[in-house]
Image (cartoon, rainbow, N blue to C red):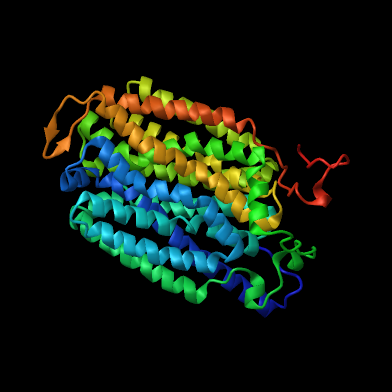
Length: 452
């Protein structure tokens, strides 16, 4: 990750490195807030049920409203990142997310809360793809797997904070106050992004990363964004990567982001604060696994094996959650942590996607792949609740519907089925050997992409 640009003098190298990491740090802070907004509803699920008098499926729909708009915005986000650049995307996204969080926090009824979550989803939907696009401009291609892993690791810290630490904070502050503060932070990050972020080194007076490494700069965009989009949509390998994310990461987000805490509270009788520690372990395991898989995929020079392995491991963990006689304590911590670890191979999907399309459409390709993660969560969160409602016995405690272990297991079987689908889809991902196979210099003797 430490490019030592040979064509810059020492002082310029230091200035470049300092600016690059300041931009990276600011975008990372914005991405951390994305994960916080994503995971926090799971910790306040009981309060939301009581505040808005909802069923499980209605609560699932409220939490998934974020994912509905997030999913729909992924391809537009990629186009925006490729055309307008990360600076505009992250600034505008932060403003919308901040306003949405404030609306959600102050909502007097379910409909207003739903509108707030939709606005939050709209705002944060552009941040990840813009961040990944920025990384393609400020970091070397040879370390993109590592920087992708670090990026997702840092983002997951927001999810970790939205679990156990948030549970402790809620002993002091109301859930509404927490979301007001989250909205203010998002607005502050938007202002900072407008002032500091630059789309690429050239915008700050530096040569491109490839020029610093003694290579030719990638060619400029050769066609319209609409033609780029058509090209990405017509690539079956991009679709395979996108569909892989539907079940593996979608299931993790649905469970850790909403149902994992209530499951432990209602089935195993532990407090919300204790239950949120298990969700924290799942997200921490996921964060560390993404960081590790970033190193592994770059070191191996392969993208596909870590992805397929992760899908297979995820299927095994979902089965263990359903069939093993586990409970609070070591067995529960191990299974929740493994659920997060097993999803870490998804980080290799993003370099795999950008390496099979022209460099100028990398944002669109990564956005297409990222759509799968949130499409899966958008489907599974309410579907999980629907499966639970099928067997609800009618028990209500303190305004909250109470469910049996059998009800939760129906939802877990759905997650397992989606994960099997992801395993099958992962077999269609192309191995790129960590090179951009769309470029002529990386094509084989018959004109086929290397690694075809």
